[in-house]
Length: 285
Length: 247
Image 1 (cartoon, rainbow over the protein chains, first blue to last red):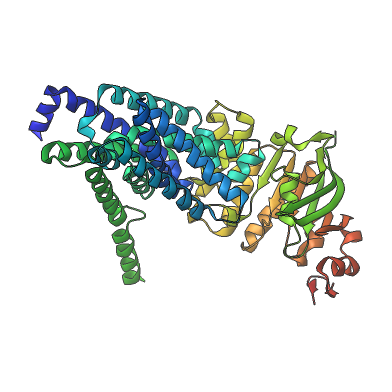
Image 2 (image 1 turned 180 degrees about the horizontal axis):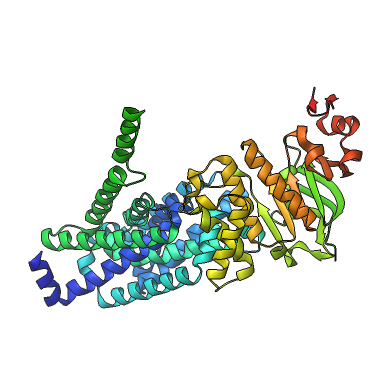
């Protein structure tokens, strides 16, 4: 641990990875809270997978992967919306339908464009390979996402909790839905290097779900989720650096470990705590 | 000045199936109005169409001659309890505070005065002691009272409540109907989608009786008749006082 802190002070690449990890953890935690509460977890998974062809096309064209990824991410969100609204197909099916197609296309394109090692990096993340430009991109996206959430917190809260009331007093709820999809796409793109396409969903959903078990206030949930996300990402970086493991899976497992702790020991929702309480009630009944 | 709501020739369909056909009526403020009809008659749809939440195929809804979109902030809506995620991380107090959002508008946060106002509304429904609880920890009746407090916090002129008395305890029902009558006496316009036919005469001044089409609209004494109810429910009807039921 001491060595890690020492190395952190010494190596620029590690500092970049560290900064990026924290920001990725924070924004995944923040956006993830809204994704979880709006019941859009599967949507998060879909968008993260569906940006793959965009990344591949960007490589082919020699432009920053950001542009292609955002484009296919947005296309996916609209594609899913279009199928759900214009047919009898239910939303979970249309999500599965669209993202598997995009993901399949992405894998083929990546194979055509680059070698297999690149595919592994994109799929599973390699936070140690974060370049300066990636770090700035992540920080910029992070800043934007946090700003939007802070400014429109009130609207995000009410449209997530009671969409009908929000619409009844004139909030553009459909626009808000797509705006969240757009932010989700940005967050996913920013997380690409750190966790990889496949496991972004763990950083989106697990810290938020952990926080959900610990509080009855949305604002606290968002902050806790951001902290858990950042913590998981940094621990993921630590193991990745020390044992040369891909960062994504490590981060995913750390988020899961935190979740299991909350699941068992949360003061209000924890499984063990509830069991103990009901046992006590029985004893004194 | 009296507020007036005018529903004119409203038709709504889902996927080509008509749900409401040519519904028209007009009411002025100072009335407590029940929207009645059998299951699937389009009661909630009518309310949503009046709120401008779903597109209508034809017709118009106007408040004081203006389309609903221009007067949304004068309207408070209490959704059906089944439409709310009761596990949402929000306290009773903060739920009521949501009622101040419409008039706050974008970029403004609720301040101390708004929080105090929310607490006053919560006191009015007798739920102040539960302010810091999560909404899912309450009973059905308590939840409904909290949502009524939220509507009160909106300081609206027109209130819409969708099935507020379903699955709630007697004392909550009394509190709620008491407040609705108070609002009526203050000159507000209150619409309630309602199911239980036994208390219709005691609760409402006016009725809208629908079954896809408008069956009748007007004062309870004139509308709540065996003939109308038989037409609405499409089967014989017993109108014994206190136990009005389809046979």
